[in-house]
Length: 463
Image 1: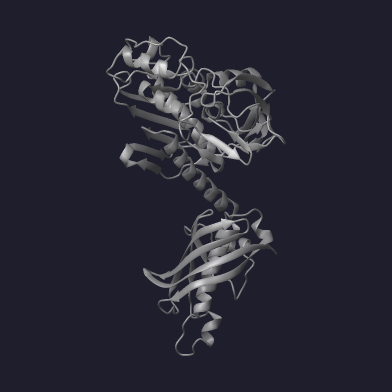
Image 2: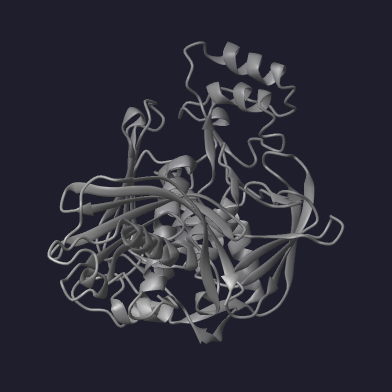
């Protein structure tokens, strides 16, 4: 895998119709500076709006991956993104004169050929990889879908499908080395569907640009040529179509004996490109499609954000996600009013877990109460709110320049007293986050005992 970020050397274009919309468009690949990422530009719309190719901008995954940001919407991007992933490209402006990339032959090869023709160059900026340290997974038991990502020094994919079709059966493939295998062994694999799906897809407003020239259609009926003719007539298809001896309409030859599972691997590569950074890990996939791929990509992007935060505040010890030195970097509070000692876990924009070690040396025990020390409930809430402040500050840029003001505390309840020697564990979940205002639900525990809970509303302000 490459150490430096990469882009193309020069602009290059290709034209055609989109698979699902049937709209014609010209797509132009343009070099982009380091750390740009992939950005689709709708050159046909006023103001040339654009959308970044990442998981935060996925709006539809029905038979393809669609991105949108405001007026900029682009359909069926997974094959283009697979080409970028396979060639290990990081930065690109993709200018479109329509709302969907040209489908080409239904594989990633037309895009790969154009990108290689334009030439690829390294840039003066290091790549940032998401490195998988511990296994993670996603599954849909009712559909038999399983995805697992295990630690690996490189990107690897093992994929299995087992459609109940004589033409397909059980298929398996492994991608071990992108540089050696992608261009010749995976990029040419074409998209496919079953004959029984064609009417449904057409009725759903899809595959308007689809045909036997850009997809493999697999026969899965018992009615023979009669069914093929019925579907062809119903869809007003101009092409001839017959039941092939191989189980594929028109006996179109496969490029690989297991071309369908190779194409599923291609789709997975494109969908996982939406993490926003390349990754090092071994993906094991069974019967996965766009929905599951995107769900896994979301998990992996959350992990990337988590690692990014931990790296930014890397002075930590003892297994804490953020230790006291990191907390001091984030929070404006100081003695005697900094009431958080460690952050044990943080899921960006979602959840935080922090702890406060309560000792007899706390200054408030001198008066609350002499001879019967109890931590004031208001300070338990303050400590909980400070943990929430760390979650909120890490949801914005330049947290060191901001401060969290709490606007309201609702539903506060105190269940048990907190005394010297206790360790308070705070767990807060982000419920709503709009602009700079949020709502959080918090709970405080000592061991397994719930000692306090409350709902908070807070706002981020400039310091």
